[in-house]
Length: 252
Image (cartoon, rainbow, N blue to C red; front, side, top):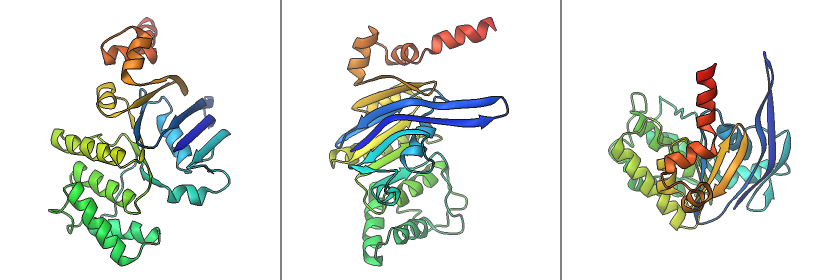
């Protein structure tokens, strides 16, 4: 389980201080897919970067399986499998070698790495390119490789930052099935996106973020009831105040 409590993060810019995250807090439970939904620039990626200890919050608390990320960030990293917003893979290595490298970083023995690689390749349908160098890979092949290496150590908590960006329809369908399998195994999955339909198709609970703040938390049906709207895209627009922003921009 993952707990975020009252997270704040600011950055210095030429125009002044930018408050990227302002009091974000939510709980992501085991055996559920929690969707982090918000428009571009809402603070989703900054929130996730704090969660997987890439940056420290200015204020607030993060716990993963009861471990305080500020007190023991190494233990927290061991319990996380992360697909970040940057998907870089080592181009001179094959997909198999990329996965094995990350396995060794997590202290896995070679037999375990081989078994986990075979399992991930079968689940993600990677066998036909597993031993090819990743230079020249399609977006879908790079994403699959990045997911496999993130999960090679069999973490109980999985964080995916907009994993379907640039993927074709069939690869996206396969990824959705894979995420449901992770949930059904009892893992805690956090899935970030700015596409309401995608989040609704996958997520048990949705956290709507806009302007660095949590605007709503609930299941798709609960968010429909909260807004009185039936169309999920309309629900998202209402909760994130996107219509008001569009009108303000038009007047400007």
